[in-house]
Length: 161
Image (cartoon, rainbow, N blue to C red):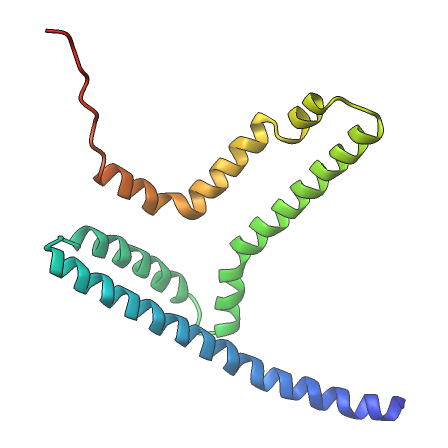
């Protein structure tokens, strides 16, 4: 049995290491093509409605130039992928760390018979709310805020005359 494992394991590892990069490359290309198709659809819709999309093109070009600059440091695809995974990894790691701490607080407080108000205050305090707001704003807020600011219409205040 050990002989079979020692014979098959290197073959499986070799196969996986040769197939995985091609699979990742295929998935990346598919995602890029889907993204380009969506952009073309949006451009066609915007052109049909007469919307000026130069502002959005500027945002996209800025993001592309930042990514190109980041990728220009090395031609090693593995290192580029590792560098690209650092921020998401750290985000997930610290979220899981925060979750473990808060769940520990929750379990300790429930075991000690704390009232629900204290448990909620301890697990969902202002710091946690601010942190979640900052994370959501970082990952998702830029484009949403730009959209809101571009389309903001102040309400008219009714006054007595």
